[in-house]
Image 1 (cartoon, one colour):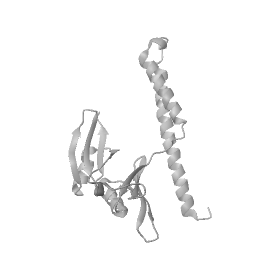
Image 2: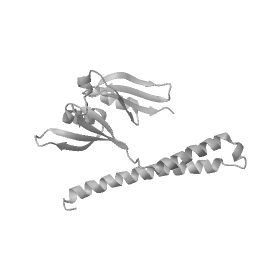
Image 3: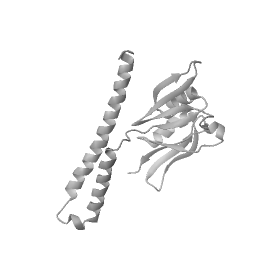
Image 4: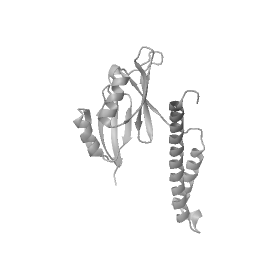
Length: 194
């Protein structure tokens, strides 16, 4: 609190987000429990589907109590500030905190993505971290759920993004398209098919 209201507000906002994420997880678990209770009958022992659902719910209940409470994906970029601005403008992510080093260069940045976030990390010889720009290819991909794949695609195309493939219905139950960002990271934007 001694560092001022800005830091207190930031800390409280971070805690609020964590509480909301936990409430959303617990609400999903509650809905599954209600559904499971509705499907239980006197022949539960012979109802394999209900028994399988029960095991899944018990596993989810156990996982809810683990010490893992948040995930953050980290992207390695050569120019963090340019990558930050590009990802917000082209893909519609929300801006996050940007930290500058003593020389004024950005050394860390975050971008908000729905219920999660991405951190942008500098290349590092010590940890052998390199941007796809210097690797000559991407070693992973980021998958992001969106409300409307085709509208998201149209916006990205309007911003001049390099499209890997156009929106398509995949056999695994998602409509998606894929694009490459400023430094060569591969992104997939998708939505489950009805």
